[in-house]
Amino acid sequence: MERIKITENIVQLSQEGQLMPACLTAFFGEDGLLLVDAGMSAQADALKETIRELGYDTPAYIVNTHAHPGNVGGNGAFGEAPNIIAHRGVTEQMQSDTHILLDLPEAALPDLEIDTDMTLRFNGERVRIIPMPGSHTAHDIIVHFVDSGVACIGDIYPGRFFTTAVYGGRMENLPARLRRMIELLPEDTKLLYGHQPGIGKMDDLREMIAIWDETYPLIVEGIQAGKSREELEAILPKKWSDVGIPGGQFGAWLVCLNRDLQASEESEPERASILRPMFEAQKTGNGEAAAARVRELIGKGLTIVPRHEFDLLQFAYWLLLTKELPEDALQVFKLGIELFPDAWNTHDSLAEAYAVLGQRDLAIAHYNKSLELSPENDNAVTELAKLGVDA
Image (cartoon, rainbow, N blue to C red; front, side, top):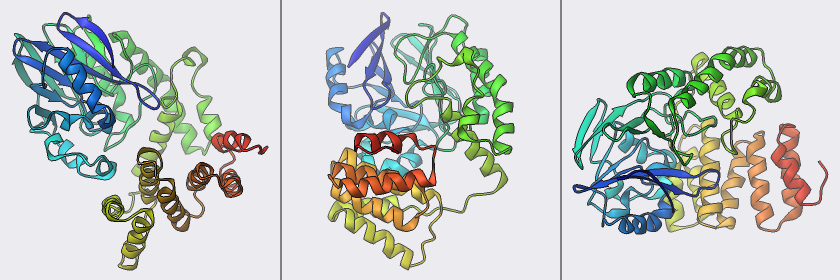
């Protein structure tokens, strides 16, 4: 785990992720160690070793900036010892949706949830914990080490790329949150971001506000006019073409804004969870048992809504990539096709499972079907080329 010295008693810790690093912060002194975010559950052992190397058995506090698995996944690594602080609603979020797949222990849940500012006196300094919800998630907070002149701002601004809005967040709230941080924090504050190692500055936030102010009206106008994804992506001026990383391109804003605009115009049908029933069925059975459980629920009156496609794909990829159970994943991907036969992403994902299992002809068939449904699916073109097929 890479360490970057920020001050004499603040160190940034960087964990490698699939698309981008996860950045944590350790603040230490005579009272103990305070950890801002706990990283991914898969890297809990590395985190424990790093904390020991800093001279501590366990953090006294863990402060979660929000509820993403890459922020709360390591909460339980130290047992009951740390006091975990998070925004109100994080406990509920950690017990729902895809967090179920983390199978986190009870000790990983927050001990204290807040929705108003609080200040800790720790290691002879003031640590201000400030709720800042509504843009990235409904549970965002920032942590300001007042006397050290350092602030951890999580994923509200995760680095010089385009963030998303999930778990109740809305993209339209982003500029207001950025402006609020500029108002609250001294100009010379050292900013630490959720996914970009190193020290940032206030002008980083101003740049993102400028990008928003220039592009947002054009994005909304383009979405309402029915412009293609390619046409919308062309809205970003060339002067900002270097903003973005894999997993954090301008398209992330487009997806979230399109979703939020649709949600404003028509309410999405209520969605009953299928992740927990699938998770429980797979624990005692396999992927086929998980798929059978969903079919059983449908038979008992469960209404399938569009959002369930995402749930199925998340669960199937968890089986495929995390648990390394491609045969089990295949059964859930096939259920996705059964329930969403015209969903390009589900065909693309099923094709990936067939490719992993060496079933080339079926992989090609479903990549082609995905392209038929979504000609802009570049991933299918790339994967077909790997299989020796020109799309």
